[in-house]
Image 1 (spheres, rainbow, N blue to C red):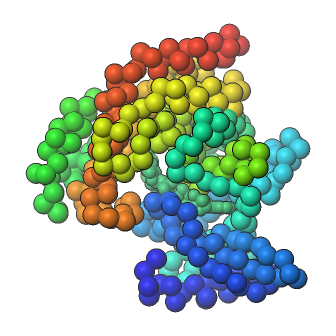
Image 2: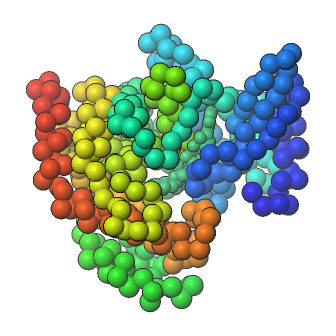
Length: 377
Ligand code: ADP
Ligand code: GN1
Ligand code: MG
């Protein structure tokens, strides 16, 4: 967080009613979008933590609407979790209202902040460390989908318009190429060619959504492994976090974004592309977990299109990183020069690899989807 804005933090904290004495306030997590802090308070000899986040207003243009979505969706989830006999304090995010009752506060710079109860004894991972973690995350994202299957999608705000409109992402990429504000286009000719050659790919899922072949559902839209908290003791994925983009979308994109990130053999910003491929074993682990979590909620055609979701989400993300690199890295946080280009390259490498592996990817879905199809969905 920029130095001058740090001075704002005590005033922001004062707008919430955290009990006890503030003992620590440290940056937390490795998200690309929001500024996340972990606050530690002590009261009656007990230590409690809270998450305080400055929401990214450049990206989320209507933070009040976004928070309305989160309050409504988490209330819905709490209802379902209670009914299932679960723990509402660990299995969903819980927003802490500001003193004025709003689910956020605004600082003197016009920045929006929100607070959540900290979920203790659980960790979010940037890399898959065991098959079991990845399987667990798949069950949790599938279950999330299933819990929201009867939520009226049209009542949620679109927090980022056209977020997974891959055709629009392609148009934005082309605009960035033609404007070339940083003079970087010439140095990424190979990557640009790779994307341009695949222009027809951008239309595949958007067309199917428009025709109704794929149903619009309430989806998470940012199903990275690090947006799941895994219990430190049981190893179970307990909570889906980062609900900023929960809005109407496609189930196949939620599936696909998890594969893009978690089934890769390397980090998202790996520089050595020889290390980057899509691990079919991890893919299978995820397919199994996701279908179990969805518990029959997906249609036959959605099942058919799951591998396409993986290719499309990876292609779209590669385009987004490349666009941001061309535009001067204003969207995704970077920690070193060229990081967005490295991220774009890993995604494009994964797309090429998935294109080769598409028959196996389809066969794996077929193997686990059999039960669902037999149910007649
Ligand atoms: P971003 O949109 O920047 O990715 P996230 O909402 O994903 O931000 O939060 C960043 C990180 O903060 C997460 O990856 C997770 O490690 C941690 N985090 C967020 N909310 C909670 C919570 N309620 N309890 C514990 N950790 C959390
Ligand atoms: C961002 O917020 P975070 O780090 O979980 C981005 C996703 C990208 C992802 C790439 C709101 O996710 O769409 O897929 O980076 N979130 C937003 O790692 O743009
Ligand atoms: Mg996140």
